[in-house]
Length: 140
Image (cartoon, rainbow, N blue to C red; front, side):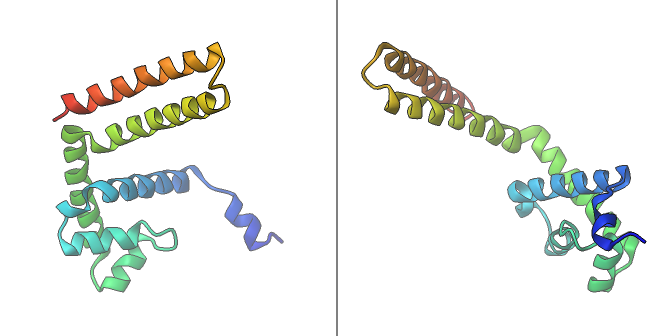
């Protein structure tokens, strides 16, 4: 007999797809939740929680499963369309990578401030900051 803990470890491809979809919705909500109606936002906020399925959301909100599906589909479509035009999420991810590279260079500079390698790190840091500033100034 298998334990419940062991059953939870086996994630099927279908479950993995649902988890990825919920993660995508959560990410889109962080940037585009203001575009949604209160009802759509309520449905999505419940749906992205790992313990709730579409059927459970429908039961909690006293609406049909089809209504839950329709709210999710419409909301997701609207948020994806906005992301395809505005690129807020992709730009944010790019900036996070750039900031991490800058922080890494800063750490290296702090450790090697007086030798030639430290000076090279400072030059690299300057280039990264210039890229970041130019990138953000062209977007406005």
